Amino acid sequence: MTDPRRAIPRTDALLADPEVAVLVARVGRGRAKSVVVETQAAAREGRLSVERVQPVVVQRLAALAASATSLRPVINATGVVVHTNLGRAPLGPAAREAVFAAAGYVDVELDLADGQRARRGRGTLAALRQSVPEAEDALVVNNGAAALLLATTALGSGRELLVSRGEMVEIGDGFRLPDLIESAGARLREVGTTNRTTVEDYRAALSERTGALLKVHPSNFRVTGFTASATVGELAELGREHGIPLVVDTGSGLLAPDPALPDEPDAASVLHAGADLVTASGDKLLGGPQAGLVLGSAELVARLRRHPMARALRVDKLTLAALEATLLGPEPPVPAAVHASAQVLEKRTRALADRLAGAGVPVEVVPVAGRVGGGGAPEVPLPGWAVALPEGYAAPLRHGDPAVLARLESGRCLVDLRCVPQEQEEDLVEALLGVAAGGSGATGRGTG
Ligand SMILES: *Cc1c(COP(=O)(O)O)cnc(C)c1O
Image (cartoon, rainbow, N blue to C red; front, top):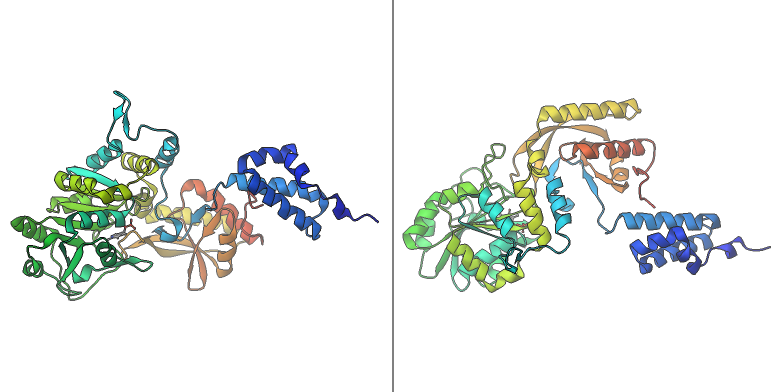
């Protein structure tokens, strides 16, 4: 008797197989070899028939080639727009194309007209100034924390920054802004109390050591009840009287007022009210790539740009490209999802529910409140709708390809279309029907 396992194709033969070889060229020989070895092992252990070895190798390599990174696409059906665990802001089509175009050699720091070196990211900076005419100049760094760190280090190193006790915030995952700021040498002097701080508290704390007044928007919580805080206008006036700059960290990256988010500060209004510098994120409510924005006084922005730390915080060409396209292009996905009309969402949700019900899926349509999420405006509910499914749908949806993340609430799996663009809806339906049919939610593409 001959053992059929003897017939398992050898590694060299598999790698040389024409169908396999084209895929090896795409994924690299090292990774291809591990796939081959794993598949041979499965056959040796009897988990796979010998005839299936070559097709399974091809299938697995094709899946690897299709997903060039370990990051897996997720359909965000949670209704949480700026979802930190899902990478915050999804880029819109314009920004995606800009990233693709910037991936090769580009004139990021070169003037093609005269062949001389040019200001890095000048197109992006021009787009920022165009978006916020109140800003004399702008600077882009790696993220919002970097923007705040650079501003407070350049203006406050070896000096004191005055900040309200109610604004000593933790931005998540154990990161506290006061620790960040002080780690680079600036000293924070807290003024006022947790719930109440007035401009007189800042005035009383002023000294020859004061480097700047700092106002931080507590973006992820609200203090309510007996509260008071100094306005940007009051602090700007105090700063002007004493020749001390006012830095405002708005957090969200909102550049102009948004009626849907009445309590969220925006860069234009804060500068208009007298702030000298505004710092913000690029990938929260602005809806762009991860980036930190500094906007405001030309003199102060120049000081920040010349600070040695600026070089360590600078952004790459991909970020500059995505940010410029976000600023100049059509409404990006994040503001679009925040502004999505409840009527339109209801119509889409009912249509989805009808399709699922038609396939025998037990569904119900329920009103839900979406959320802005990690981007700010924690209290603002975004009225919307969801398809409610049995709780057991959540895990297989998450395991599918593409993965679908739904919201679990009161023992139900809620699928909210707010953050699901129209072009993802068919994938979502396939995933839901796949789970209903007892599958993993996989659509059969690239699951290997
Ligand atoms: C989010 C946030 C930051 C940090 O910005 P990142 O882009 O996450 O680095 C700083 N300050 C405030 C007020 C924020 O909301």
